[in-house]
Each structure stands twice: as structure tokens, then as C-alpha cells.
Amino acid sequence: MRRLALVLAAMLGIASSVVTAQAQDKFPTKPIKIVLAYGPGSATDIITRIMCEQLRQILGQSCVVDNKPGAFGILAIEDMARARPDGYTLQVGNVSTNAITPVLFKDKFSINYEKDVVPIARLAELPTFLMVTTKDFAPKTLAEFVAYAKQHPGKLKYASPGAGSFPHYDTEILSRRAGIEMVAIHIKAGPPGYINDMVKGDIQFAFMNVATSAPQIKAGTLRPLAVITDKRLSDYPDVPTMAEVGFPGVGTTLWAGLFAPAGTPPEVQQTLQKAVVQTLNTPQVLDAFTKQNIQSRPNASLAEAKTWLAGEIANWQKISKEVKIDLTD
Image (cartoon, rainbow, N blue to C red; front, top):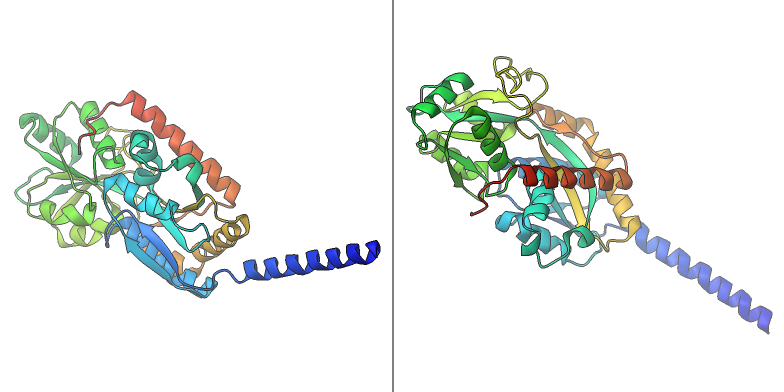
């Protein structure tokens, strides 16, 4: 009798394992919601929508993008982190929301970011331009811009997605290196929210990603004075790098990454990570990215993603200690 009981228990255990494996294999069985901390048209939004179109082909389920800007990215992050950890609510964030905000605004979270959020994969990187308006604004080079700013101290306005964002840091670092003074205008919607202000000449300067600013550059309403890359972009051969114009090391490369609630089952995290890597290496995505100067940069594994994010956070902990800025938004 005891032997029969053991056999039955073993059979039940095997059956349970099979059922569990089958349930996990079914993921996903419904659309996946991806929460963004920026509005439509932002670089993070563009990257997400390009990814989602192809991810649907691979996972067999669509992505529903939920734009939730505000509060330094905290609203979007907490919305994702509080969701049921089943892989159906994710977040796409960037260097500002998911590396700087956890450092500068840790006390504003109602969650423990380091314990409640896990990275699934870095998605992409995108060059950033040092951009000025062409509306009633004469400078055509960074040297001319610096000279103009010195002649008009405190008169020029620059835009950023918020206090403590990487464009805020980058501009303040540039201002100190160049010996100029500008007034910060923080607009939470990001570049899509302040492009019109720049086109009208109400704001003269901003660090702005290539994908968002391309139409305005083509139209001649915005002018790139330098690009944050190691070498010039083939689509913009006349735009020098920051090193070429005398400011090496100034500026941040924008990245986007995919994040999930920490309690998401490892098998689901693995499924998502593999699907994302596959998606970002498809000809369709690579072609769409190339057209907007976006570089596909997925991590090779979940472990690599964790190491990468930890390094990013450590870097901004160092920068925030060395460069003190006004965090009033």
C-alpha cells in the first residue's frame, strides 16, 4: 500500500509539472501593456512602437502602449511595478526615468525600485543633438552660440523633460564648462512638448534626440550644432561631434530599456527577453531603426541586463554627487 501511495504521489507530481509547464508555455495569451513615461512622438515612444509591431509577430499577441508622463517617470514605473507580476504589464523607460530618477528621487517612490523592478533588456541607443532654434537666432556653430550666450547672460532659455533629467544635467555641465548662463524650462512631455516652443523661438536651446528632431532639421526650423557620438553621423556629415567642438565627454547617449515587476516568473522573464532580442534583430526593426539613426542594443541575457542597469545607476550616483543642480521642477 505504501509503495502504491508513493507511485501515485510521483505520478501526481509529474502531472502537476506537466500542467505547470504547459501553463508557462502558453505565455502570452493576451495583449501586453507597455507603460511609457513620455507622450506620443518621443524617442522612447518611437522605439517602443517599432518594437511592438514586430514583437506581435513573434509572441502572437499585440502590445498596448499606455503613455503616462509625469513625476520624473515615477507614475509609469509604479503603475508597472504594482501590476500583477505575470508579464502582461511592462514598462519601457530610458536613462532619465530608470537610472537617474531612482537616484535623485528615491524618496518620492512608494515602491522600492531596486527590489520591485527588474530589467528585461536594454532595447536601443539613440544619438543626441545639441540643438538651437533658427527663429531670430543667428549662431550657426557652437563657438558662435557660446559667444552669443556670454554676451546675453541669463537671457537664453533651454528646454529639458524635467529637473534631474539627463538633458538637464548635460546642459548644466556644458554651461559650466563653457562659462555661460541659461534659464531652464522643464516640460514633462519631453521634446514633442517643446519642439513648437523652439520653432517659435521662445526657447533657444535643447539637447534633443535625432529621431524626434529630424523633421524640424529638414524643415530648417531647428539647427544641430553638435552630436553626442564618437564619430559623425552619415546622415548629418556636417554636424561635428562634441569632441570636435571642444567639449569631449559632455552629453549623454539616450537609451531605452524594457522593465517588469520583480515578481514576474523567471520563465516569463526569459520568454520576454528572448523574444525582445529576436525582435530587435529582425530586418524590419533594424531597417526602421536605421532610418531614424536608432541603434539596436539588446542585452544578451537577463543577467547581462541586470549588470548593465546596475552600472548605469552607479554612474549617475557618481555624477549626481559631483554635479549639484537645482531639482525644483
